[in-house]
Each structure stands twice: as C-alpha cells, then as structure tokens.
Image (cartoon, rainbow, N blue to C red):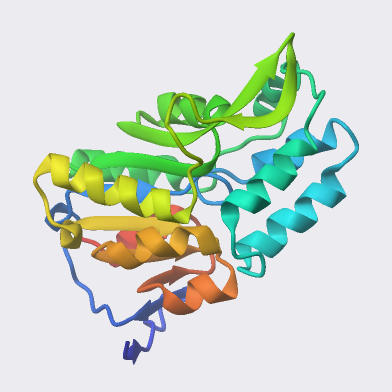
Length: 239
C-alpha cells in the first residue's frame, strides 16, 4: 500500500493506503479485539498472577502477539494449562480490580452505534470477561473462548462445547465474514480493530483495518495506526 503522510495536526495517527474523509455511516459493522484493544490488560496474564505464573504466561502471550509463536491454538493451550487449579473467584477479582476500558473505547462504540453500525467483540480471550465487556459497552455480538471449570477451579483447559473450536485468528476472520454475510453486507463495509498478530486475518478481510497501540507487524499492515491517544481517535478520520 502507498503510505500517506499523517496530518501534522494529528501526531500518533498514521494512515496507509487510506485517505479521509470517509463517513462512519458508510460502514455497517465494526469488530474489536478485546485484550489490549478494548481493555487495557491481557486477562490470561492477570489470571496467571493469581498462582504466581504471570511471568511465564506473559512471555508466551507476548511472543504470540508479536507473531513469533505462529500457532495461536497451541499457544493458548499451553498458557491455559498453567491456570489449572486457579479458583474461579479469581476471574471476578481480575475483572473488578485490574480490568479497565481503554481510553476512547466507550466513545467510539457509542459513535458507531449512533451511526447505525453493529458492533462485534471477537477475542482469543475468555467469555467470562467478554460477556461483561459486551454488556458494559452495549456491544451487539461476542465470540471468545470458554474456560473449563470443575469444583470451583479452572481445569487448565478450554472447552469447545459451546463454539466447537478455539477462537484464533482464522476464527476471528470467519466470524467477521459470517456476520457480515448474515447482515447482507460486503466485507468492504466492515472495520476491524486489533493489536496483535492473531488480529491480522480479520483485519485483512475488513474494508478498513485499524491497529491500536499495536505490535510492529500489525501496525505495518494496518490502514490506520493509532499510536498515541485513545480508540476514539479513529473518529478523526471517519466523519
């Protein structure tokens, strides 16, 4: 893609192959990653902290998001295995004490809904958090991974009984395209927002790809890169 020079009045906002103004109302669906995109933490890292394994889990998370570990399913399986025995109550503690919406998340979601768009949260993270963030922001649809529980503790496994498979990059892309088809819209009418390597498949399928404080590989491939400020900076290029 041909790079365009970001406006001097908008530091920290980079455009590639995309020239505003474009109307928000021209799009019908926006898909958000959750961890480190809509919210300011990687939930699995914070859960691991409950059993003193945050450093070990976070190292795998970081390598995965940079794209150094190619197989997200393998990465997630390895990390979740380290959570065996964590009390389910620790999930609520993480939500209450550590999880915050990223700046601009609420403003951007509100603006999208006001423009008549549907909002999708699609995450390689966990349903416990995705369902709560969905309700908190009034998001229309959510797809994530369900942690298996037994006797009030995590088993160290992801259950696929609900969805049939782990939500990885390919599943994020499939979910975006399937929802667009059900809505009767083209992929060109969708926006995908993410920060890590497993967001690239859905970002590549969307009409507009947005990297938010993203890993270098993701930032380089996005049409819009928000490097400074909040998610609502997208509204500076979408009228």
